[in-house]
Length: 99
Image (spheres, rainbow, N blue to C red):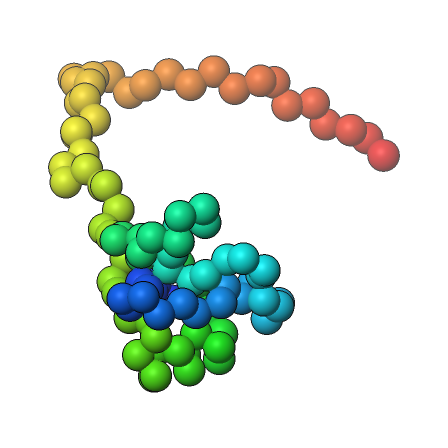
């Protein structure tokens, strides 16, 4: 399912809608659950017509999600010098079934 990353605007309150399209009582999109303060980092919500309409009317603002904390460089794997030798791999003996 697609999602939108939104933030509440000012004192406006947009009811929170779950993935099935049902209102969640006492919950508002882009706001803290207990204090109803605006979440500065925003919130991911289901891509639903209810939210798109609120974005169009200015009740919510569409924001880019915070970037993931991904390391910028990955340490290279150590190189093992075998010289002229090939690695030896021991494989289990293969038994043939006569059926």
